[in-house]
Length: 217
Image 1 (cartoon, one colour):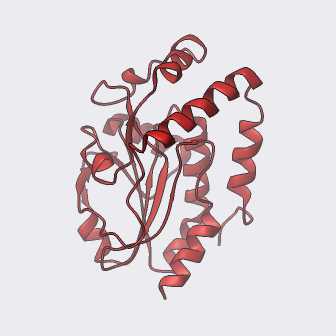
Image 2 (cartoon, rainbow, N blue to C red; image 1 turned 90 degrees about the vertical axis):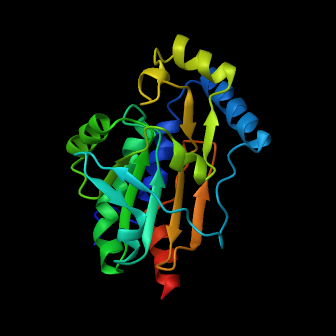
């Protein structure tokens, strides 16, 4: 069973976001709204077929979606990188809920635009035992329609306020990122549930994922 109560991830994310200074939070909200309004990264919809892929894991071994679907449903999470504290909270919550996913025959995969070395770093730090894959060229991120380019003001915010050059974290050296997104995919490869939001302080809570997996039965 999960070591976290229902809604615990959402609570943690909300508390962490509340610590962001108001002027910074205002600029972030404007950036989220800009990305959403652009329609550039709406994410694949429920009922669409999930694109197949093969990507390296944290140790360099290739993992394919097809091989994981052969085992059962797949919970697919796109995260921004190990530098993102909200992503780290999410990954740890997913690890805590992994037994519940496994009980339902599901496999968990997390994908970021960072290199396998970075994937290995977060996997070791957070004690992750699921697939943590590297989409260095962001082709899978684009295929799932969750790729976007950091808006100008958000780029300035990262450089001048956070002191974080995101291009140094991306394996392809760009300012492109995935919208944080979670897809629940059935064994036939169809997306049955999803959470896609430009607001990176929100994620699909593990209890919502469990409910989506239960609905597949």
